[in-house]
Image (cartoon, rainbow, N blue to C red; front, side, top):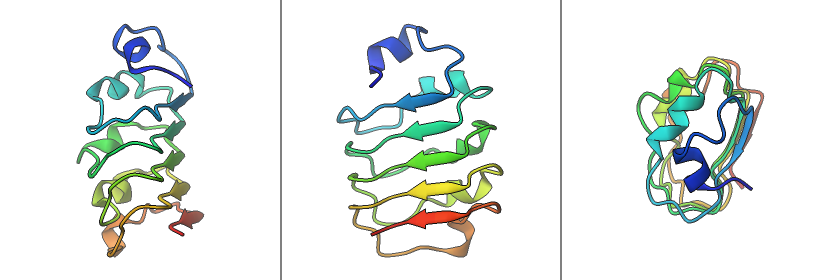
Length: 112
């Protein structure tokens, strides 16, 4: 697992997979420093309620895990992520999934 301190210090530059399951309550903006390389992002096991509207800046992102957080709806920012194929948001409080939340290349959506 990676640490937020390593991310903020720039020690994770160029990585393709990032695991930040460390009790976050907000999306760290430093993740966008990995926009050109990041393919898999695991944000499970945090206290997140939202994702940034400009999540699509993570151009290569194809897998996103956001399980065990505090989401009540699937964020619409996911729908603008052109390469996102796998989305896992198990064990949240999701009550609503709008069509705008579904990425165009989605293959797997895991909510239960």
